Amino acid sequence: MDGTRRDFLKLSGMGLAALVARKLVGRYLEPPDLREQMTDEMLLSVATKGLHKIEEPILKQFTKEPVPEKNEHFKFADEIFTDAIRLYRDWQEQGHDCPDLFFEPYSGFIHNEEVALLGYESIQKEKLNLILAGFADVLNSGSSSEAISSLQNNLSSYFPSLVDGSYERFIDEYFAKMSNDEKKFGRKKPFSFSIRDLERPETLLLTDPGCGIVRRILELHGDEVLKMMNGDASYDHLSTLYDEQLAPIWQWMETQVQKRGGEPLELSDLLGYLFYLNRGNIYEAVADACVITKFQTRSSRKTYYQFDNLDRRNFEKTDDGRESELKEAATQLDEMSRLLHDQIGICTSFKWLNENVHDDEVFATTVFDRNDVTNEQFSLEPNLKVADKYSDSGKYYHFFNTLLLLMSMDSFLVSSTVIGNYVRSRGGLKASIMEHGIGKIMGDLMVINRGDLVQRILFSFKKR
Image 1 (cartoon, rainbow, N blue to C red):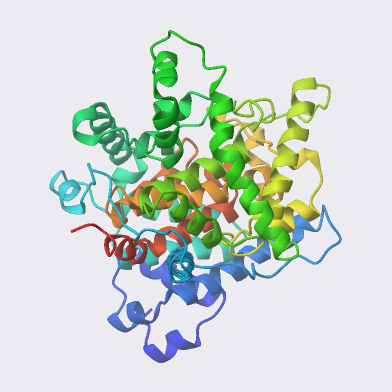
Image 2: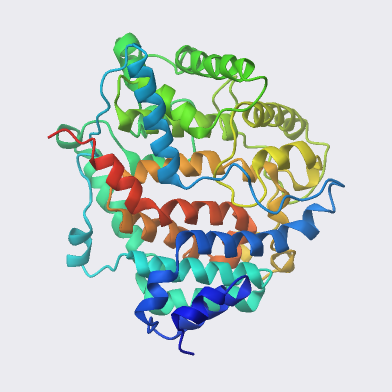
């Protein structure tokens, strides 16, 4: 099928996704005018319509409220970044103590050329658009098994290193080597942090992405922390040290929301404040945002241990540990929903989900066993995860984690890393959709789709 400019401009809904999916199968033989016109806004529109078709019938099982057709607060990642910079500069002009912004990329920043020399192919912008259109086709098919399998097969054909895991192993080994070389790369371990859960309080110290939170703790309590890490003192006091850093940030957010009559802050507000707290250091501010949102959505704020009694494949309510963590996690998610807008989800926002879905059976549940993807559980409704607000809350730290990776490697390599993570898992793309939810995955894809623009902004603040 040959696409002309006129044909393309007439496309909407499934038409765009179907056409681009055919081009994906057709070995990227689309004409130049099709590439030029396949804008991010068009992809967003198609993906949003498709996701709403999936979400609406499922969410109607849990609420009588109308399901939103789109997230009114959505913004592209570069727009959020630009808003944060604008806010910070406004504070500068108002006479606040705001040093000039500056960006120091990860010392071991991986360039696209380095990976290409080793035979790995990164996902360039035009191919990224085609992949995103393939995901849009999956959405418009209702996440049908046929569409998911087709996209998985196409990705396997054109980017085999992503699917077989060899690219991921290379990146993992590369970062591990650099993280161990403290003299050359300092304490920043962005990739180690991005792939690890914050299981225990000390995990952040061991996988510190280079955040301002850890830097300030070391400046104030360095001797005490060193004793902890050497085994000469317990980590029991570490939660208090985290509280010293995090509590004022949450209090600032609370105060700002009160001033706005209860309207949640935008992500740019939080990022702008963290610019201020880190004296204009963009890297540390983004890393702080990632740590803050990850703790809030995945760990107990009382102990800083990860919630580990929530993920149950059965729905028994007799486990006291699960009941206790359900309440604590729900309270923290309520706070997140009240204080910070979800600008990442393209269709249903986390705030709407948190306020309208109250069924514990879809809260932090895994509906299949990754170790046995052939069993009957794997055939359960793959899109049920769109009703899981615990899972959906991960969009916040996923967003900042992707920004963290954009400060550590070429944007096209970030695209390869994020997409590869979803398609290379046991059970492939279908398993990832069942584990994470197609809505959260699409949020991640929209961030990497503007990764090159975010990186352009970042490097404009690099010290000469």
